[in-house]
Image (cartoon, rainbow, N blue to C red; front, side):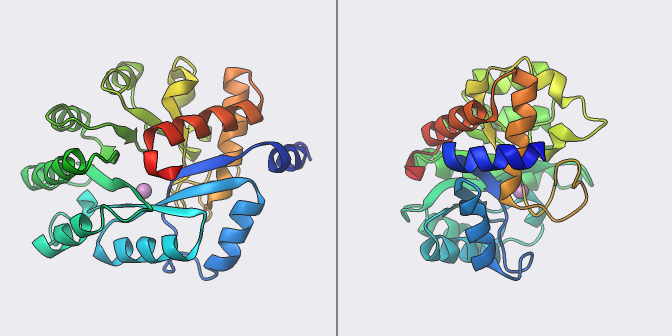
Length: 265
Ligand code: NI
């Protein structure tokens, strides 16, 4: 009941931005319905992030079809073993499209293996160089690779968002000092997560809302298919943490997202 009350109020008063989702037909069989739901709930804009050429194409096409959908394109580290030069050329060719607001999802992921780390760094830095060249922000995926991520980012004049941030306060402050904002999603609501204690010490100006949908549903939907309306739940969670209202969280994080991603406005 309480959530419904907020949802009603939010719909009228606030506009939200989901800065990271994966809206692909592979995950959602009724995208027109989904986009209507999202916008009806007050989520005005979504940055739909690609991972490879297939999804980069799809997020580009969807951005042309729906006003609310923008996109980030890039090659995700999970594709490090099978991407080609053509995949990178495809990304570069579309960076000036007017709804491509960032290069992403790019980064380093040593969770399953570190064996290909040189190749991952090469792929990541190639795209950081593109971001610098085209003056675009980056959406960074970093998993079990904090030190190398920071080292790579330091070599380029880039800013953007550290997607799904879940590190220590010390790491948070390093990223913030470098000009990055932290992307906060359902992970902060997880029962065993210590992230809330870290984020409570970070100024709201440094945060953006995201979902990583269809993954990372917040409690109590953890494990189920996520969607962009969950930014309202994250906003409510942050509202309790910061002792603000969800409306203020929405307003501020929207301002932050518009500041970081120029081409969103
Ligand atoms: Ni993602």
